[in-house]
Image (cartoon, rainbow, N blue to C red):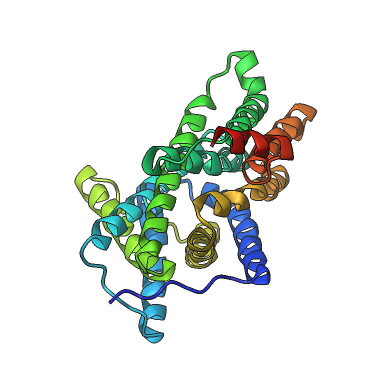
Length: 309
């Protein structure tokens, strides 16, 4: 029998989960970039989620929560492994080859807009005026952030932007799957463990079929970033985030993505030489304001949404 859903969280618990997600995921973008090098991207991600899966299964076994997904839960868990623990990170690591890690994080912060769009497509929810307005502000912010490259006709970063958008869309699909699994009574820790295992096996299988060189970088930089991504970045942050998805819904859970681009861009400025310009600051503010509109629309937009309903 699947586990019962967790009880509603208190405001303090919700704030703690949000803080964990913002601080950890805001700092994992630079760790993703540190993984680039001699190890193929797909293997680096497989190493990350192999370790994370081992830790998750060990904890579930120790706490007597280990259960095997069956029936309709099984294909959802496998699809979650593809969307959240393999292909989306392949996209983001390829994005980091040409984008500053902080910019990739800003693109990822549009996840709440994708969540709202997917909720419309999958569940038939109306796209409220504040969601549409937020989407326009978010798009304007991204254009402002990438305007120097667009104006100069430089296209080196545009493939990275495309990879980041594809990874964000994949992540949002994983959100929908997680919400569906939690509505069936499965805890995030349980489905995460199996999803991480599925993602690891998918990437390992791809590496074998594609004939990728089997390498591991023993340097302190690579090992340190690997451990950080596997433990805080995967075991802790994914469980915290997907717990928010189950308690609040995917749209409100993605509110955490409003804040972590500030953390990511600040780290990028320190370690990658990212330069804050007035246009970049304005672009970031537009993206954040667009995200805020989705969750806290002004009264006149709420009234428009009610009249439309």
